[in-house]
Amino acid sequence: MEQSQLLSQSSVINTHPIPQAARFERLDAADAVNLELRRKLWEGLLPVKVDLALNEINSSETPRSLYIMAPRENYFFYILNEVKWLFDSYRPTDKVDAYDEMWFEFNNTPLKWNVPIGVQFDALVGIAMKQRDLPWCLTFHYRGFPEEQVLKLEGLNFFKFHFINALKESHSLRMGSAQEILANMQKKDETRMIDGLRKHNYENFWEINQNLCDKHITELKKYALRVFTNVHHTYVQPNIEVLKPQDAQSQDSEEPVSQNPSSLTLGDVLLETFPRLFESVLNDSGEVELAKKRNFEVIVQGVEADMNTPLYWLQLNMSYLDNFLYVCLHFL
Image 1: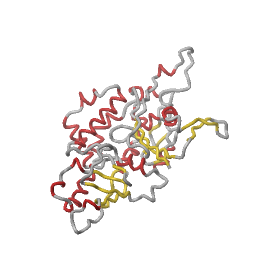
Image 2: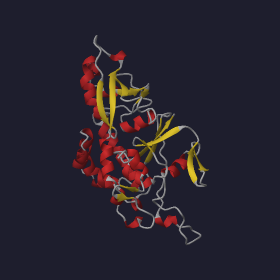
Image 3: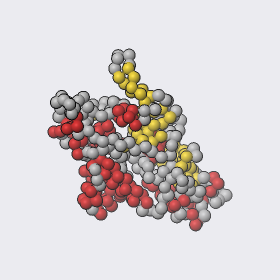
Image 4: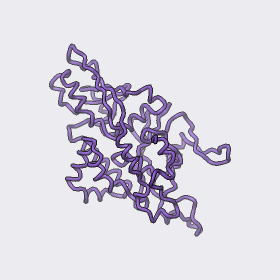
């Protein structure tokens, strides 16, 4: 089944139904988690072609291109060893291990070490032009680092430091604090998780992350959401609180209001966060639906997102490995 089908059928996905208003308090987080989809997202790959910048070749011979399948959910650090193995011999020896000067580029846009590969592809390439731009053609540099736009890869521990920090940040947003990580994650757990990323080993990584990721909606304080575009080099992080059961009742009436914690949709959040890009309109059936004011794609994990998908389901099932849900707006 295609990912687009999985996303559009979000009311009941495979075997784990989304918690509904009348019974969501009685369900565990696992009732909304699709483990098959989680595995498919982990296995998602992008064909990438990497060339060494022509003005940095210190040889009369031009190196061949590197063709590699890069995991969408992982980071450029994952493919760095293979890139260096191919290109190091074409560089001056003093630059071979100068990690803080290394960077990837796509169409004159520097790529980020601390943002998942798939997020950057979705924001910069999108869906409509995906076939034209595959394999994804990147340029690798050993010098000329664009430090105003990208964090430097300051040694081999950079990856571990920034990933764990992102994990703590997402947990602090969702749970109100990062205490669960600070108090309960042992050194061996952290090592196993990072080893799972470096080797792209599903079992090693998710054995540790599952307890951090799979939280019931009643435990959540806020959603951990980031929005990237192809027109800005930074991101927007909406401040979206999770509606609690007691908040879903009008103060002036004993009748419950229509919204409940699991009914908040991606469209609701985008309309509130980007009123210049979205608006509510009446369709031919007289129903209210979300419309775009400009021509762009809304992409989550490589597929165009259904605006009616509950945000809670997306947070559990479509978040990346740092437990942030990344939404990409690719302007056409």
